[in-house]
Image (cartoon, rainbow, N blue to C red; front, side, top):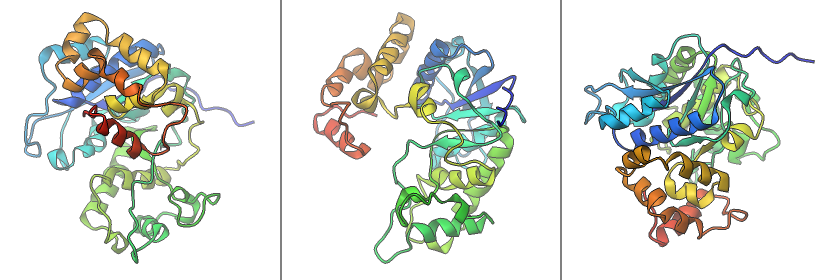
Length: 334
């Protein structure tokens, strides 16, 4: 029987926080992690881009009481330099922030619009084998009539970086169906070293952006660039679809809610209970009310009006119809 890898002494959990929505979401993430992860090996870092030429406005987390409250949950605010992306492509934060973490220590990155709903210490991570979120829809590529198909587009990318395309395929899925091809949501990913992962991610993303293969001629690269490069990174570093057993991340241990209307529309009752319990203390409530979607959805009961629109046992399989029903009823907020 294969031996499970030894547990690392520390695991660095990384999210991105900056002025605006992400700062308030960072507090929610920190509150949820403190409430549910008791394993002291897991340390939370909130990566904060430094002001610079690539930012149109100062991205520093403000106001100061919000910053203090994030740190009071045990989080370390970790400034990092933006050298390549910035305001033109803020999703690039998740790539550039990796270099601020300690080299050679395992990490888990989460999108900031996530709640930790269980103990991360109970997740059976194998940090030698990278993985990423499979809670994903076929958002990219968008196949055009008479244009290249899925196989041609993805093979061109694998060929560009000298990777074995055939070994990435899920042969249980039909040819030219998007699930046959390795594709992740970048809502979480992990590996044994943030610098190795980050450099691979950065090199591939910049190469695709600067000189996309000819097969991508019909495709938009933004906002999908991170999710185009991510499967190539995972594959190159020896990971894949089955790196982590089902049911933990994007399951019992974490929820990538995306925004408040979607959380109330589709997440489990215990997730809503967690959200409302961690936001109930008055000092927290006072800060979170400054962000309008949290104020209206959590504290003015609009979230439960959204919740009443849906039967969570019979939700649409795709996110778009859920969004449309919320918008039709006048409750959409981001």
